[in-house]
Length: 317
Image 1 (tube, rainbow, N blue to C red):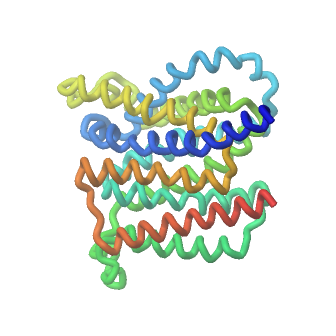
Image 2: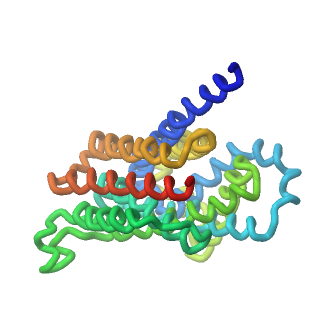
C-alpha cells in the first residue's frame, strides 16, 4: 500500500515536471531576441553550448565510466542528434526569431511531432494510425494559414501573402528538431539520460566550432563584437539566462518528468512551451497575430495534440 502510494505520487507530479521544463524552454525568446542585436546567430548558439557544457561538466565526470559501454549505433544516434538538434536546428531557430514574427515562429514549431512521428515510422518501424494522416493534414493546413498574414493573396504571390525568411527558417528548425527527437530516442535506449544530455551538448559545441571556423568567425572580434562590448551587461546577462533558465535546467527537469509520464499525457503538458513563448513574444515584444492566425494556431496545437495522442495509444497498445 505504501509502495503503491509512493509510485502514485511520482507519476502524479511527472506531468507537471514536463510542463515546468517545457515552460522554461519557452522563455528562450526573451533572451535570444535581444542577443540577435548583439551577435550573429551561430555565435549565440556557440556561446550557449559553452555555458551549458560548463553547467553539465559534473554530470559528465560522474558518468565517465559509462562511456565504454556505449555501442556504435548509439554513438551514431548521438552524433546526429547533437548536429541536427543542438547545433543546426538551434541556429535556424535563432535566425527565425530574427527574420520573422517571433510568435508565429514559436507556434509553428509545434509541427515537430508530425515530423518526428514520420521519422520514427521510417527508422524504428512505428505504426502510423489512420487518424495520424487526418490530424497531420489538418496541422499542415493550419500551419500554412498561421504562416501568412494575408492568405487570400497566396495565389498572387507568397511575398504579398506575407511569407518571409523567418517562416522558412522556422520550418527548417522544425525538421531538424523533429528528426533530432527521433535520434534522441535511440540515444536514450543506449546510455543514461544525464550522460546523453551532456554528450549531446559536447557534439553540438564541436559542430558549432566547425561552423564558425568555416565562416571565419572563430576569433575575438566575431565572438565578442563591438555591439556586445558596448552592451556587456545585457550580453552576459542574457547569455547566462539563455544557457541556464532556458537551456540546461529545463532539459534535466523535462526529461525527468518524461520518465514518469505516459507519452499520451506528456503531449498536453508540453504545450506549456508554446504558451510561455507566446506570452513573451506577444506580451513583451508586441509580436501580435491576426485573427485568422490565432484560429490557425489553436487548430494547429489541437491537431498536433491529437497526433501525439493517437500515436501514443497505438505504440503503447
